[in-house]
Image 1 (spheres, rainbow, N blue to C red):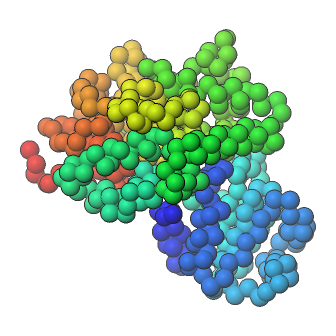
Image 2: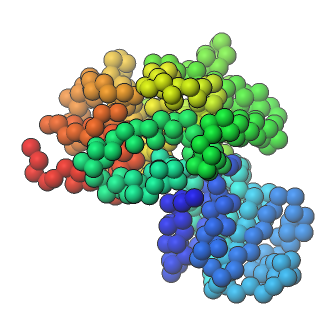
Image 3: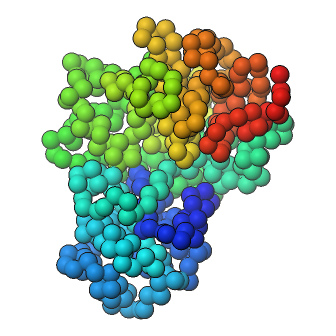
Length: 447
């Protein structure tokens, strides 16, 4: 299974001032597999240390954090010599050993020749709780479920994914049904690696759903095992309310749907916990459209999405027969699935900040507002082929964006002020940081 993040790992390996790398992401998105796969492809040797219930390694890191001493201890533990140039050191479940996190500072400062990658579920929570490791001494990489492009590579073929990268919209239009069918499958299967691998090999939707149920059950167990006891019930209530929150026409998160009379102060800690461990994606409202969008963020209004569209469908009880009934998938729970899908793809794009916009009267809502750092892009999401763009037009009249994008099941089309980007190509909205006519497949000078 190909993960595009491995290319980032190759670039990390070649950096002159390489720092220890921390991979962040929810449980079961493939962090351990990615680290081991990279080790097997890029190094002569890989040493894998899992700190979960590993008392010997915990004891080693509990004392002096001198890198020479730690390397000697690891060599004794694995029974072989470590060649720093040709060996990848993997520290997994590193949040279970806070001193191991702290040691990364000393490896960077005193022994930068060692190649070290770390990962762990709940790592974001550990960092927010004040685990001691210095800012600026490590690099970070976020890992998410497989994107639609990665799903295409795993299930249909690499060439179809390449067409997306090349933004060959005329050829994609010829094979639109292949992309649409794959998108329907992706809505059901999602991007969790185990589910994708099972579907690619067996094409068994029942087995995919069984895998998704096991993943959701494991998340529920994590709530009880790892979260503070006082917020566990609230975490469950927030988590279980997300499908109904997204099913609303206005997908703004409403505390009253969690529990009648619910208020922000009752659930803020629970939402933060879910966000920190990567299970929930929080998209805040903005009331302006200038760089940086962060300055116009309304902290009181936001949407919550979960980590994976397939898991959302499982939580909502979406049945596989919808895949066999033509467009039913796009009419049953269509808005929730489609916005979840789009949000999930936008999250995979580096250095992109994602918000949504509503005016003060609530008469205009743009599903996503994307801040590339250089420009603001309004993005309206349509689940089917409906090409009306009333809110986007209202937004444009007020803010006059350089470019406006609508994504739908319709083919690629450039109008006088609007680009329709097919849903299956939404990941290509910002392939190189700045969206311009060339990147969207539009020749310069197009009227």
